[in-house]
Length: 408
Ligand code: DOR
Ligand code: ZN
Image (tube, rainbow, N blue to C red; front, top):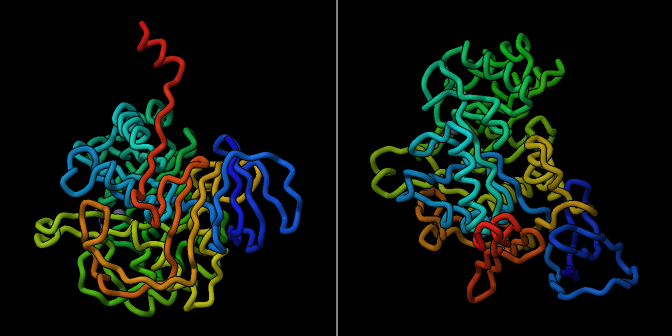
């Protein structure tokens, strides 16, 4: 099956250019320069109508609430919201019920996400059993299912557990993703532990200038540390709306935006955290971000003069690199995970129109810049804003094995 995408402006971490993209069997087969003759035959054409084609967004941080908290979100509603937001891969944190803390639990979520057929789920496993204080998960079995480990939602208070996690991240080659509370103090502790123990550390949702300064210094030392920032910490400061970490000062926010421009912040992580109205009223922290993330990032970046190619680097190329995926660029041989956006379209956030199961955001009514029109997963349009039925899941192909099982 071959599809040709025409009339698109191509933007990825490498910059912006015109061109056409030929997709074959879920991969980018060829990227044509403008004016080149296309001899290849193809089965279908997607006329982008002048929209901008970017690599699908790869989220380094979110909460899908499945299993156990599915009244807030489930894999189907969460992944619908994700593709509506242009995400083709999302990283789902382990604070489910029960806590995702074994290889079997990770495998179960991955299998069910695959059945939904919209976006890939990079399912995270907890660092400690049931998010307890000291006993780490069984790393050898877990790393067969995921390379992302985190107790997100909770700080790792016990320095010994943290040190063990860092050593294991080195030995078993995974990324330890950390929610740091209190933020700067714990990041400083963890940089010390990284220096002593080695390892691969990713700091989740940084929100303060002092944190970023500490991470920038650690990078200069050559430590393997990366960090992410959320849409809401870039977009707003000083709000009372409850989220962890909280909204900070304008000075912090300005430093985070500068960190995106300078490259000291590596990835964009939505921290999509759906909550029901009741839970939110009772004080649950979090913001529902998938459907507005791109517009929020792009609104901030364009005001600050940061090009869309840098947004793409932070939303796709760098997350892929950190998560060990060969993806996130418009490049021959890469997966045809793509998104068509209109970077100049302004639209209004209407929480009631979210396809997520929850609607918790303080930004309802805001006008933001940049809208997702189509999301393409493995060469198939899985979300089309302009279609009567916007969601078009990939039908799971039965593997030979399962077919034999069915026959038996
Ligand atoms: O605001 C947040 N919500 N921060 C977190 O760390 C956890 C998340 C959640 O799970 O709701
Ligand atoms: Zn967190």
